[in-house]
Amino acid sequence: MTNSLLFDFTVDKATKTVFITREFDAELSLVWDAFTKAELIDQWIAPKPMISKTKYQDFKVGGKRFYAMVSPEGQERWAIQEYTSITPKTNFKMYNAFADKDENPELPGSEWDHTFSEQNGPDGYRGTKVNITIYNESLERLERILDGFTQGMKMSLSNLENLLATLSKK
Amino acid sequence: MRRDIFQAIADPTRRAIITLIALQAMTPNAIADNFHTTRQSVSKHLRILTECELVKQEYKGREIYYSLEIEKMKEIDKWIEQFRKIWETRFNQLDKVLSTIKKQKK
Image (cartoon, rainbow over all chains, first blue to last red; front, side):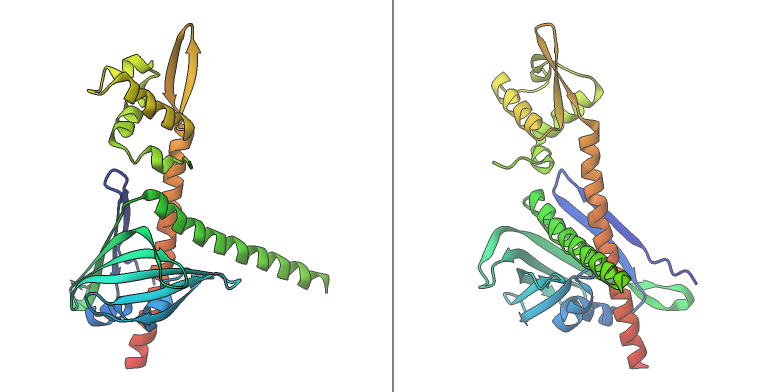
């Protein structure tokens, strides 16, 4: 069974905005929870082998989520999200910035806008479409995000190589 | 100061210069003729583009010609592709989370 869910990713360099659209094979309220509840966000937001760790979250306008992306070596990259607008099960906006472990943000950050809509799936089943736009004052910042992830991946790959080397000696 | 390709394309005048010289190599004067700014300002943008290694200079007689480093432009696309892959991975992980929760509910 091939399950092809719509996935669209475009970067407008001129307006420094990233547009992401994705469909999910789940009802809207569940997808909304997966994007807004820290215990669920932490389960998917970090591309493996990175893990996401939320220190605290207060999902309300003016509230924050303070979290870290943790590399396989335990290196923590902290960031803070402040919720700027919430329309339950429809839309939420936030401002995301890197931070130090004491919650001091490193500006500028990026503005995130998420819109959720119900889709008619096959057999009348209802899926959910999520539109995300991310505006970055600096594209260099995006580059740093990517650097962080690729570093994490490279490190775990070299770990794997070491492990394989050790195992093959036995 | 750190120079990278993203800084190079962050400015509208520099993007216009890139578009111009993508078609043919041009002298700074010929480039400046296309803008309502000073020759000095165009020179500054060309210097940044050169520092970012997005354009190369070639001397022909007494004139300097600027042209685009196509390979460097491709780096931007490669970078975007990596970023896209991260989101793809994320969403595949989310699909699994959603299907696990759906099964638990049944």
